[in-house]
Length: 339
Image (cartoon, rainbow, N blue to C red; front, side, top):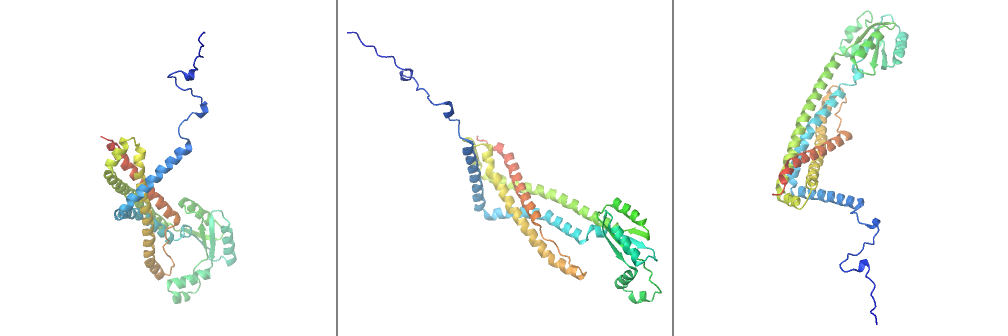
């Protein structure tokens, strides 16, 4: 009897042969998808933020005083800037400060003065025109000069009618051109423009703005040094931990992240404290300003901290804290390599 032959084994059944991959190319695992990576990235940032909050909470007094030092440095230039804005507002409107006085001829009637006022008010570069009659000008002079009884003895009114012209813009060249144009109008004897005190006030304000700018630059540098030194101390306290993280493959961005959050949190605290310091300081100073203005018959009062300026202050503090932390970590990151 002849021996029966066994069929040859299939390739997948051969001894030692690797099993055939029957999966389609679409089923090959290419790694985590974008949603998983995004979730991991957000989770890493959340963990870094919570870790920074916990570490700052363990040293509340030190964290508070660091933020307070930053707040004082931030509030100084902002406070001076707000005071300059109030001084500019105290000086009155620039347009009213640069009024052009048109003195009419002595024989100009009330109707001619009002007609000229209406004509000037329609000019495109004029904001407002006001007519002051001869009788009204004399009454104001009697009231303001304290020589009312002596002026009553005059045989006739020596004052002419006046048209006060308020320009829309305060530009020296444009105002001079407007004055020359108004001086040529019929019935105008003289057009007078006094910009001396306006120019002096403008020069003082520009000097103050330059001083505030220079002070801001110096204090920003001081803030960067403060936050950089603070972050450096945190880095030194965690040097061993960071070296271990880098030894097991931690990236520079992973090491840097909690310190950046810490710098931003210092900035948040400093911005809020600076806002409070400015609000309290202006309110405390406003009482004395109101009493002083009342002695001069004025209702002037200091304006508080606008919400837009407060938010800008808070955002600037956060950015300074972030930048200071980034510079500090970047400087010491190369020294944190495991040995």
